[in-house]
Each structure stands twice: as structure tokens, then as C-alpha cells.
Image (cartoon, rainbow, N blue to C red; front, side):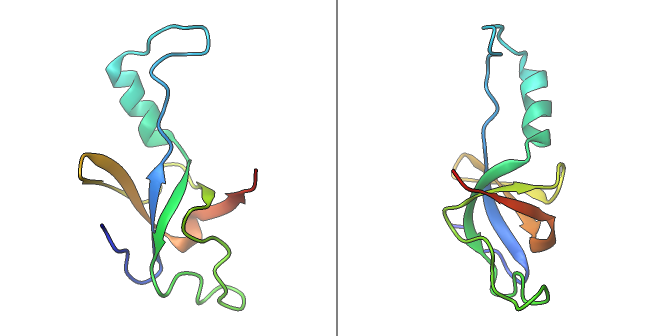
Length: 98
């Protein structure tokens, strides 16, 4: 598994649907563009310095939680045929509570 360093987080980005709600199949190029623009996902791991310089330093998101992050933030990495995103803690703008 990929282990983020410093103030970085590893996030498994939510997948974009291949079909629209109306049942129209999206072209591959449109899917890839939409996937890069996706801005929600599940935190897989957190670097040791994440949120240290913000507030009291207590992480406000943890592994397993769904988060919202800034569009086009971070770096996409592929690991075992899965796409992940490594991004700085400051680019996480909220936690999704269901």
C-alpha cells in the first residue's frame, strides 16, 4: 500500500458512472475527464504531519471516512490497477457524514 508522508493523505477517489441517470453511455474520454474532476472519496491513510499546523493539530478526518476535496487537487497515482489521489491536508474541505 502507498503510505503518504508529511501533511499528505491517500484518498480512493469515488468512481464516475459509465452511464448517465437517463441511461446514456458516456464516451471513454468524457469519463476520464469527469473522473479527474471528481472531488469526493474515501481516506485510505494519513501522513503523520497532517493537520499539525491547523488549529490544535487534531486530525478531523480519519481512514475510512468520505471526504470532499478541492477539484483537480493532488496527484493521481496507480497502485495494483486502482487509482488513488495523494493530496495535502489543506485541500480536504469537508467530511461527508451519512
